[in-house]
Image (cartoon, rainbow, N blue to C red; front, side, top):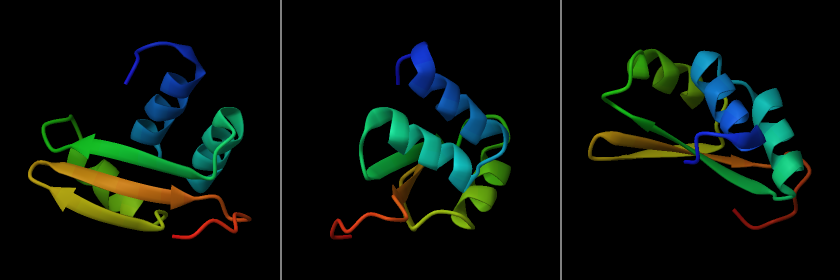
Length: 80
């Protein structure tokens, strides 16, 4: 992920306190209906971030040491 710009700010916000509001803002900014948030197990407080994000994500899965969360815009009619 680039370490600059508005999308990085959303990424940092998700690491501090995962929320649907932050994801909705990111979806609006990017003009998309689907977003993924990736957490590496080696990150500081990764366990806390993963557990908190599981509660708000539309889906998630783990691949090795990486957990990937799926978010779909609440008003989206896109297939899941």
